[in-house]
Amino acid sequence: MTAATLAEVLKPALSEGYALAGLVVLGWEDAVAFVEAADEAGCPVILQAGPGCRAHTPVPVIGRMMRHLADQASVPVVCHLDHGYTINECREGIDHGFTSVMFDGSKLPISENIELTAGLVREAHAANVSVEGEVGYVGYAEGAASAFTDPAEVARFDRESGADAIAVSVGNVHLQTEKTDGIDFDAVRAIEEVTSKPLVLHGGSGIPPEVRQRLARETRVCKFNLGTELRQTFGRALRQTLVDQPAVFDRLAILKSTMPAMRDSVSDILKTITLRD
Image: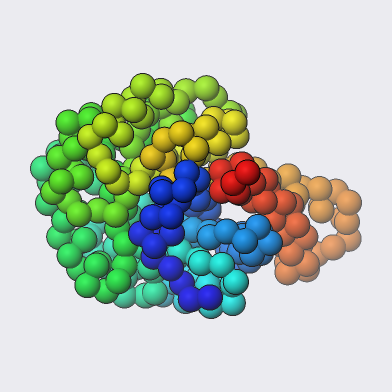
């Protein structure tokens, strides 16, 4: 199966009432486990390279790795560059095999955010690459506070930017290690009234599974970004291996041992938000 764009996989999700998982990739073992889980479930998956991943692995390398996995998969695989803070970061992703890029202009005035996103959309669409934008600001646990998405701003962003999907702030928070009941459904509905685009929730790890499922089935939220809970799964599996097999020292064997737990974690996520009754 060839790599898919974000627009291609979100369109049916929006019309049929389910959501997809944007899974944060930090290495080969993660990415393989994620694609294996998606293959088994028979649903598309979004592999995401965020700033941390890109700081560790050069974009040309991670882009080719994701495209290689997409070529081997039996389901659509989106190769997504997440949180590009500059247009040049997004351009680098477009140049090196990513099928989707997110320009994060959430800290900019809305007019500048729209102008930069619209310019990127023209370049990206010419290369058959999707663009995700953000309106409002999704904060960080024990870090910068969130600013909820203003419906008037998201309506303008929808009309003028041309983005294929819009990330919004409605109580979701990055890097939460515990599940919280923070999603404001009234805020989601106010946004839905003024936009026709698929909505994205960053900070999906902090949203309880039953709330993710409700959002997927009852709202325009079509993509959840998930990283923290997968890193927690990796950490637990790695520690258990070191306890159970203290004599093991080979890096490849140690990292490979984390893959079943990562695969199981993603399978549970996909059953909640992607698989229909």
